Length: 407
Image (cartoon, rainbow, N blue to C red; front, side):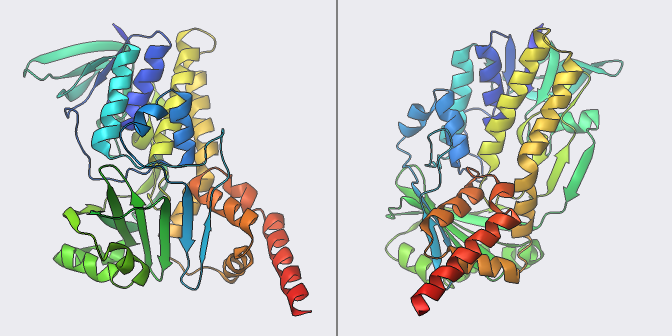
């Protein structure tokens, strides 16, 4: 019997397996794909996620994949851009954007090296139950053989459409519909050390560097436009990019590599992430719009939380149900402010007059611009930065500066 069986070896699953195996537990990690395997989804790791990779001793391996560091963040509002180095978290202020085929394989290998048993090309067909408790899995291995395995806990790290979540009927709450859709493509011959975000009416455009000397260019827009857009994906993508002169200038001497890809299934929701004999981690337990690029950070953060909780439960420090309830509470307290902020951004509502006044006040204020961009990246807590007293202080400082200039 295993201590834990983890279904899904993408970032959340491999990280959880690695952390549990490092603590000495017997772990089975199963994955329906075989690595290396790319995935058509975002792959930006904000600084808090990079800090966890550093803590786990994996950052040097990511750097060795020839993935360039992203040292600055730029938030272009049209009339002006707010650009800065974000405040560090645990000594880290840079981001990386390794392709899934690289980072997923790296994390899976880290789990294997930590002592987890890894079975790729393994299709889980059902959960084994004893009364109301999950006791294991049954599935088809790479050879086609049907096998069953048992464990003290089965962890669903199998994404938004988690089979584990469906099988145990994990309750969904704080749910919001899909608000936006994103399309992205890769271009060569562009060199950047900055994540560039361009905020335009009903549009967010982004540009960042990744592996193989390629740069990812994306556009995100309201979901209501999805069906019209996909009638001519390549043409509509290029026409949207053409509305931003700065992007036109960036890509004018480059060529697109491959097809335009879509991220269209992006609901916003929380699931209860535990029950008798089961738990959820990563997108399986909590999912939100990727407009601020928090997916990897959330996966790593929840993996660390869950591994620590299970260690306390397995070792008898606290009852398992108690530590898993604390896991859900800590997860929600940490991610809820960003969840609400992301849903607000992804609704593409025009900035309120107060927000427009804040943007104006930030322009030319290097310290507060850095903290604002840190809030987007996750190194500054959103409630801290957007506290009314803090916002009033920033605006008042800008007004005093303007008055002194006028005098």
